[in-house]
Every structure is written in structure tokens, then in C-alpha cells.
Length: 117
Image (tube, rainbow, N blue to C red):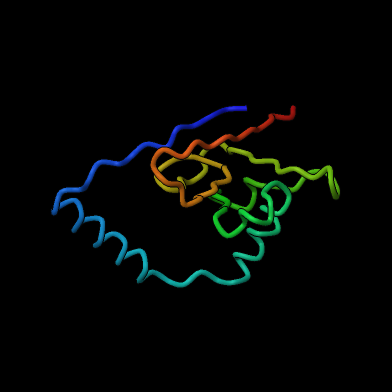
């Protein structure tokens, strides 16, 4: 099991804070997410994320081809795939699950993962 120490992020300057606010405002003005998209995302997440963390969890893939459910019932897991030439997601080539839990400075987080061939 791996351990991550949550650290305090330095205070932003006034210019940095204004830039962050502008970015957040621009993001909030973009088109609203389709509820069907979130339901599809949750169908993947339920395979690997406990119900108590679903509200904080997201799938980050460029295309539906980057993710698949493997196995059945209790034996289910996710297959995350990177494909040559795929478009970027959040400035990078990725296929991942994120859990954006509201941690506090000083919290310790433990997590585990396993790669299946």
C-alpha cells in the first residue's frame, strides 16, 4: 500500500488569484454536462470505487475506446488503454480514474492498485 502526505499549497498572489478566478468562471460558462454522460461514467466507476467516494470520482479518458469493463459482478475491474495518436485530455495523454476527495493539509491518504496482465 502506498502513502501520500497532503501538503499545504502556498497562498496565491493577487494576480494569480485573479487568473484562477477567470479560469474557473470560464469553465463554469462552458456547456453543462449531459446527465447521461455522468451516468455512463458512474457505471464504470462503480466497478472500482466504493459508493461513498462516487461523488468525488471521475473517469479521465479522451475517448470511450480508452476504457472498458472487464469481468463480471464481484470480479469486475476496469481496463484503461492508451492508444497511439489519441487526443490529449487535460493537457496530457491519459486514461485514469481520479478521486478528488476534500483533503485537509496534514491528512494522510493510503491507496492501493494492481496491474493485471
